[in-house]
View (cartoon, rainbow, N blue to C red):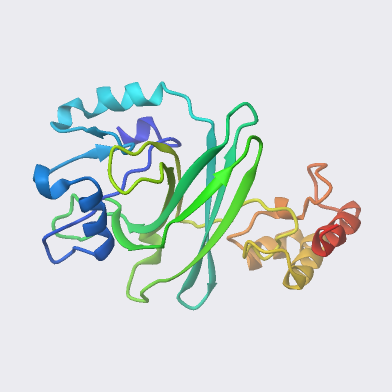
Length: 252
């Protein structure tokens, strides 16, 4: 089922009442009133109980047919050591009305724990939520830094983000979700050549390297997109981008 919806389906799992429980897992269980319903229990899009599991595909397909004006992208990049940064870009289509969203971001591990081995995308940690207000045609970028345990298998981790109605209980509509899985990549942000999500003087040397030796740049910054050097939006990275890059750094 997952392979049938590779770009639109983000599955996460939380444990409770066992040795794998986390504070965030308990919080989500309380959000969905799992303690009242019992386990196993399935909720998706913040709206429906999809148990028994045989009804899941039908209900999910029905939800897929409902359009959403919210667009999300996720990036996940190393900052050095065990520190990583989740990048979240949330946009609202120009034809939509203003909307208030609660933005969630979690780090999950696939096939964890190893026993039982059917667990998928279980929570490893979660960031604090933020509420944002988007106006038509507007985008907002959020950066959330997370420390990963050095004992974790990084290649088995991923970041999952979603935009949900700002309620403290279900039903709460999930407008959109996105994920960044291994191998991690940052978002395409023109001028952000070191992919930390910021436009600073730290981007100058990577920009020079991208201009002079794109192959070396991609080798040194494998989590970045060379397209971040396309500051004049002509679909290539060359000396014509220099003035535009300077303008981005200066905020002009």
